[in-house]
Image (cartoon, rainbow, N blue to C red; front, side, top):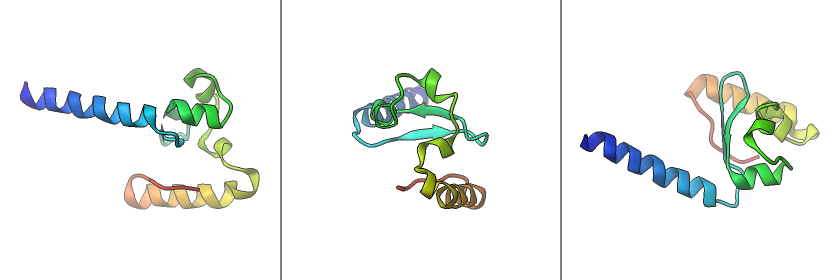
Length: 88
């Protein structure tokens, strides 16, 4: 029970940090469909809800001129390291 409680508390803290961040923070599956975007991220890309976001692909959140390079970097990193964290 202690391990579950600790995990739940850590998850709640992480969620609080993400939701209060002014930066775009998101998580997507290997299908490149967003599973989570924080409120600031939704606002930055002009979306009102996660339902709208799930109709997009990760590439849609990059400027067209940056898209190919960004996606090549992100995909290569995910394949080699299992995840990507960074700024573009």
